[in-house]
Length: 280
Image 1 (spheres, rainbow, N blue to C red):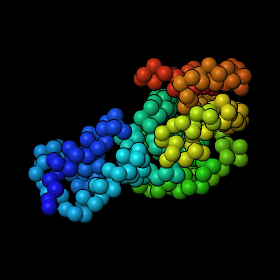
Image 2 (image 1 turned 90 degrees about the vertical axis):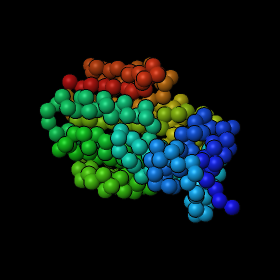
Image 3 (image 1 turned 135 degrees about the horizontal axis):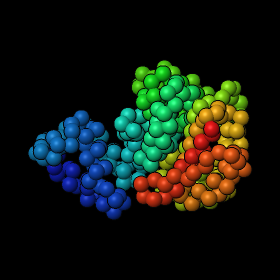
């Protein structure tokens, strides 16, 4: 019995509807990956006969989607800031909201008219630091992560993107690092411990990358304290935060950097997203 592409696609979308808000998009992405065809071809060739090998792979992907395994982990990659990154369950899946941090870093960095030295704390897949380096030629970076497995993924992405200006270190925040930096950025764990358990994606993503302690700000506050002796003048500190942490984090930052410009930036949905500390 043969299976046509269009029939499989519609059946898969129906199967995903009870558990997904975007079943058609997820099915199209899976088909694109397995068939190695673009979306237009997939939609224009509903009578294409799927091979048994293709059906087996598609069925496996669909079953994992139904059980809500993130698409990036199924496919092993994710797009971020126009680049493609290898992603495994050892690292957090890059979020589109985090691209705002990269944008802010580039806006500031390009105004400095010099080669920037960057520190990315909790580098994970490397998506933040590597995206910045791709767009600030001549700049250098240090990336640190407490997870050895995350450092290995960042090294893979460094090679894939042909970037040779970053040093990757397995360590805890910035405490043991030497030297100072023009730009310090981080997307650290910021979810309160009691909230992590209820998150759907927490079943698959590393808890180490999600759990921010009792109130969600403990790790961020530790980095703020350490950053005082790691940031150059002029310099910029950019930290991603949870939507309800802006006031608390800004007050804490004011204690560490009392004479600096401190702002909480909102994302495109109007929610607090970034702590921005500019040191003159």
